[in-house]
Length: 394
Image (cartoon, rainbow, N blue to C red; front, side):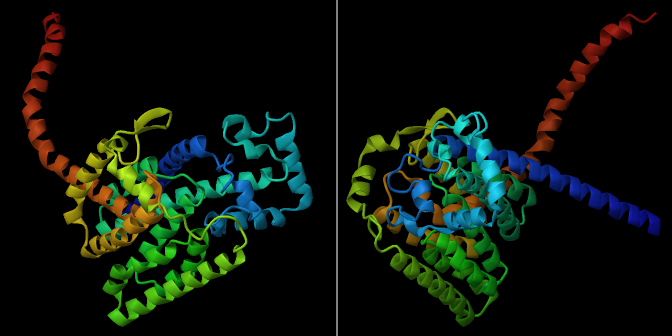
């Protein structure tokens, strides 16, 4: 009996390990496809005079982009940590018979800054840091969906679909997804101290995390008293505010403004019916863009299916995120730059998870009836195909 039990446990562990490896492989492939689609379209903003990666690395980019320094700081520190002879050999290899060995410059026409010897090593570091952030964000989204919905299969599929549809346009979008998903997971598990420690890093990546911290209150309230939950949120806001203040003082002399006010431009954009029919080249195919009516219909369907299935805290979180993000988007966003609605990304993934779970549950309910309906026809076809062989027997 003991040997049988141990064998069963070993088999279960081996099966779980195999499933984990397969899942990770699928996640890596989907993340690679999503990231390639982003990079082929935008690279690292190489042609931008406001927020190119070169200007971000030199901290000469315009405000407010220059405030988003987590990845540039990390790339600069990583380059300094690499031994000089190793760095020289890598750069020399990338520049040898250019662009033969410089894979990014050779593959992506927009990656023009990858040709600059002074920046090429950091350019590659940023490239792979961002991919790692996207993959980590997808895995973190899965953990959030499992934690808050309990649907393991749907929670595994939802981040894959979300990554392929994720609106991203700059390098800080990928760490932002990871930090927001991790913040929701920590809040849902009542890890207040870890959440406070996470906040400075997340804010250094993008200053809007200050507002996202407020959206975490419903999850904290389920774990703590009102006073304790408010204290954690307040500490996060203070930490984010301190980082924001430091960055604004540090780069006060940079060109640009603290924020770009685009309310009237956005109102004119949304008042024009033609803007709901726009398309964009996505993965090499012209597909609906931003607020295209097709996308709005798909979003409506997902929300209608998944909203009532979401836990109460998730619905509260989504409503707070919308109440904060939508006005900010109208004030400081730009047209159909949907990625500026990033505070609702985790809520969108959870809605997608519930929508997939609803579909799977419905499929399980209807599958037996379908099988019974087609079984007689299948039996008849098998009998007909077997008849000639039977008749040919002596």
